[in-house]
Image (cartoon, rainbow, N blue to C red; front, side, top):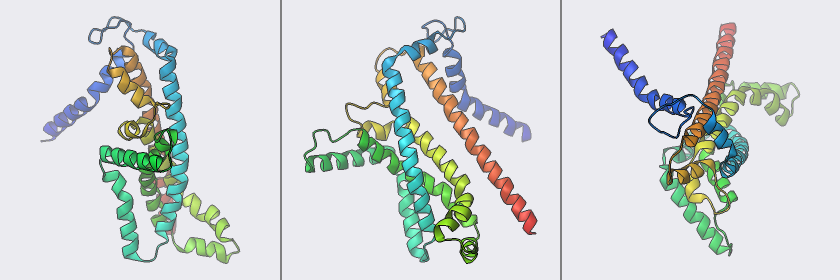
Length: 272
């Protein structure tokens, strides 16, 4: 049984990562062939960085992801802190359930509903363009917020409720107690939530597609428009770069979580 389980595990990992490995290999292919590897080359990476429209889309994506991450991190941290301090149990449960809806709701439903709302509001106020950068920003903040709350809330639950009160008894103001006591406890969750929000915003396509205007194109939408034409290894190079950026963010997130778990274990051992 152990041998069978190992074989099945290997097959599952091959199934998961074989497409990515093929993508990485053919991004260094010197020829235009999408099936025959001729010789290793950085030609398509050079061609990618000569593509002005793709670089503009990349800049738009980074701008959108950065601003959406900053706003959703601040709002999500404040929301998690407020939910944690609620005394009424059923009200807290209801708020958490409503918060989880954007994560379980299909992206296409979220995208269509937001598009209809933006168009309705735009026509109500007589706007020429109902969809633009700001509508995409609101949409990205909307679906990033629950993930930040989901990462910050467990850190608040792990914290001793008496710590802020003890800090205020020792002379701290409520704001100083929050900055000196509560925020350091939340910080690993805040950073992890920010990384998750940035990653989700970076590669979102469905919601961005429905809420984007004519003057602002993100990288996923640019890639989708490129697939309608002849597919070149330039797209493989682009996907490879995105993969390594996402992998780097995932490693950072896991490192922060491991450091926080070690700190919690040390505190528990010292308390015993």
